[in-house]
Image (cartoon, rainbow over all chains, first blue to last red; front, side, top):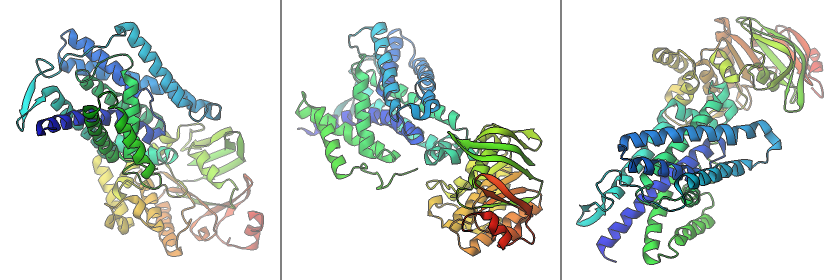
Length: 298
Length: 236
């Protein structure tokens, strides 16, 4: 493998890593606050990618596209919590402990079928977001690199940074962490737990929205693209340790790069190897790379 | 400030408190005693809205708060410092102090700084350790932090659930002295304890047994004497 090849694979890995990080963050923040998560997180990404592709093809400016996608996904995230999750609290013991898996997957199936109905079964590519064509390259260290990929990396990790600011530096973010610790204690501190949990699912959906827009030009957009993202994001979150925000980021980078190199050496089974790595690591460190031996945060 | 009339409450299918009548006046400190499982914690959870009221009514400052949402009550000055202190371990001491006050409507940055300074003056150890995670404090320090965190919200009524649990006598004493001083300035205090050592700080005392009030009277003159112990039930 040449040095140029190596750098290109590394950057492709980082690109996918950034997308996985965003998706896994959505799982992580929901799990942190509620010990539940959206099994349709990848399908939220799919919907975002479709809306973004359709608008970009209609020559709508990128800024407007991002705005519309985020608005749609915010409504979707809020609705998911209201329709698929909150009613389970009212049922208490009559709803099974893991019924949220079924309800969120159910929403995912509805989204997949809606996308098939509206946009058809065939795969498509979104037009590029930031460059004239998908093949635009810049030279980095003498190697040609796709502009779109570079921008996905920059924007992706920037959004991850913003997410940290939200979680650690804002009143709402701290409220999320207090709820993660103990919802009753949070209530007694004047925190509106229900509203904060709504907000958490909106934030998770917004993360899916951003990754959907970014993923459009990078991967093929088709109605069933979501499951792959959900599965990989779950693997990434497990790899990083569900309770540790930095672990999720590290897990995503490791996973993305492993995947990129695995695909280079074996394109038919490339997706298999990173998952095997995750399995292997979980056998050695069941709480994830950065997980604590006991449950963190709560 | 607080008045309970014929309150029966519990959670889920369990009814724990029966026909509770209780009055807490402005600036009064009332101690609720009782053995494990007598319903002391449920009494506080009922007032702060975390338990379900089956019948009867609760008023706070003349307003009916039966069935009100707990976070709204906390914001309006009915502050409950729960059992086990519930310090958020990954937030720093200062973040813990601010986390409640930040949700009080209409609070200004200036008022928060003033209150923060007041709490640091009350318990200087919190100022020394303001940047360390709350989880690394000792039990006594955590209880001070829990009381201070409640006070940051500007309570008119402060409810404390077993503040002495697991603490050294010295630490208990410091906290009780601080709370007594606040009561003298007009804050109402409802404190739940298993031990009788807090009796000399309170004006009145109640004894709960199996979810009912079996004794109510002046705290003065009472001590761990036979009469009170008899009400405690069981082995006493």
